[in-house]
Amino acid sequence: MVQIYRFAAVRPGRRYSEKIPSVPYDVVTAEEARECIEKNPLSFLRVSRPDAELPEIPPNDDRVYRRSREVFDGMLADGLMQRDPEPGMYVYRAVQDGEEFVGLVCCVGTEDYENRTIRRHELTRYDKEEDRTRHIDVVGANTGLVFLLYRDPGEIFSHVRSLIDGREPDGSTTTASGVLHEVYRIADEAALARLEGLFAAVPETYIADGHHRAKSAVNVAERRRSEGRFTEEAGKFMVVFFAHDRVRIHGYSRLVTDLGDYTPGRFLEALPKAGWTVRPYGKIDAAGYQIQPLAAGSAPLHVMHLYIEGTWYEVSRPVADPGDLIGSLDVSVLQKDVLEGMLGISDPRGDPRLHYMGGAKPLSALEKLVDSGKYAFAVAMQPVPVETVLAIADADGVMPPKSTWFEPKLLSGLVVHTID
Image 1: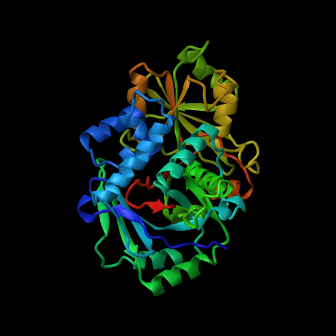
Image 2: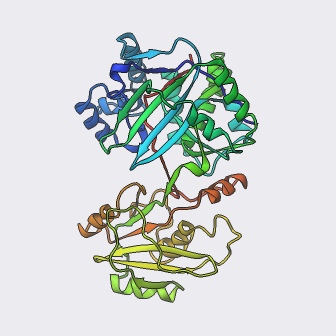
Image 3: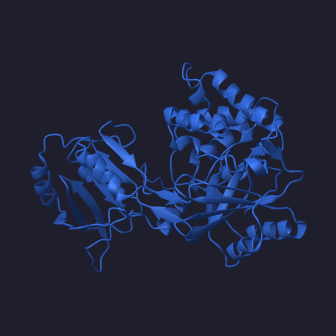
């Protein structure tokens, strides 16, 4: 069962809710964050990416983390951010391209991560864990949301959605890309008790985004226990729950800098020899995010789309073993047979020849990068079905790096959970 907890959030004052929320710390570089802060000095990136304002100091220096705490405390002291008077929960609503996403913000216990009530499908990296562990511990807060999915038994989503009908949001902002983000505070005792009862019937949940934030929160709880600094709130971390069938999932594109010993022509000729069917695709909708497959059949197929020398090609072949959840992923076969097998790119996490682009960018962005000569080719991937992601997590499987791009992308600073 899933136990959810109320908390008294720190949130932007109503007059500042348009300015303070920011993109998550891990989707921008320090330089990009610095540019955002220069344009908007109220940006929450000052808390989540303090290294952006301290370029002369190593990013893992203690002074960088102390800067986060100083800025956060200053925002509270100046009234830019305020603490709600009593614990509650929060409905998070995002509207993107006319599509509405509605989730519930609350806290969960770190023990749910440890006992696999919260399931995951990605490995975490120690350096990223340690960064967020120190950040959470020094700031004394979960400054970013962990994005969790749940299988709705039938009435949770509709109930959460009903809680905001006819209401004005308690905080809202619209991003530069036109995505509306709203937060609604839920403080009614009967409504909160109903939410707690509904989630008690959910057997497990799944991390869609925020694996490092979740593991780091667990690390902080362990560290504070061992050092005698544990608090009740340190044993919890902030999440937002979305029904698994009410989110959007994109593929994660690959960009390769060079073809090694191949020319473009020889590379295209070598793919059929390796068992792939290659056909020119023709015109695509470059403003879109995904290419509709041409290939179809009764048996499962690997399908991906290759952009090279100004032309899109569909590359496909039958799935060898549909029962192999991870081995049958398009990204797994692309990595093993093409990137490593043909081009020698053996480390998908660290090889400088391989780069990634999240699926929320239009296909024209891939074309532009290849046409510029910076990359030899790009591969646009089909999205992994969300049920496949959940099945892999249920089986304790680990998906290859950059397999999924979930939306909505949640902002930081709209809601903060303090642990001191």
